[in-house]
Image (cartoon, rainbow, N blue to C red; front, side, top):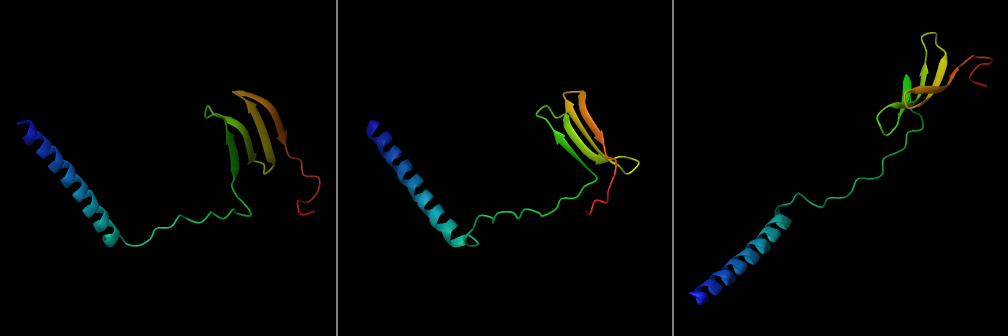
Length: 97
């Protein structure tokens, strides 16, 4: 009985190794070709949006940069739920200078 169990163990190990080798060969011959890593993404020279929201680790806004309803730039900084700093833009000269 013990000898029969050893033979079954050897047979299982042999079949497992054979199946692994066969699977490896099949995968290498049936694959669609060599796979390469993606190239690094290009960094955009300009990002455009109507507003930018900086979020903290708790998922709450830590800063907001936006254009208000009057068309003025507005920057707000928060500490948790408290507004700690705000600036509403007043245009004194053209933005192209």
